[in-house]
Image (cartoon, rainbow, N blue to C red; front, side, top):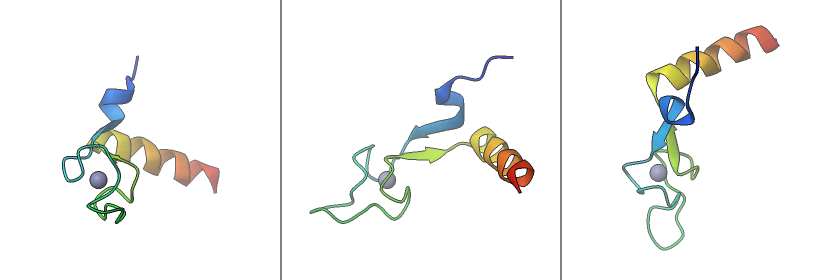
Length: 53
Ligand SMILES: [Zn+2]
């Protein structure tokens, strides 16, 4: 099974990938990352965190 990065995260529609809302304000939707996790990304992150502990 191959998971592409695009399957895990998508460009934030709120800031359109810039990571900032306006005038340098960090985007609240993506925590200034410029990308947001997809459902698949969230599942994988949850899985990893669960097993790291
Ligand atoms: Zn954003």
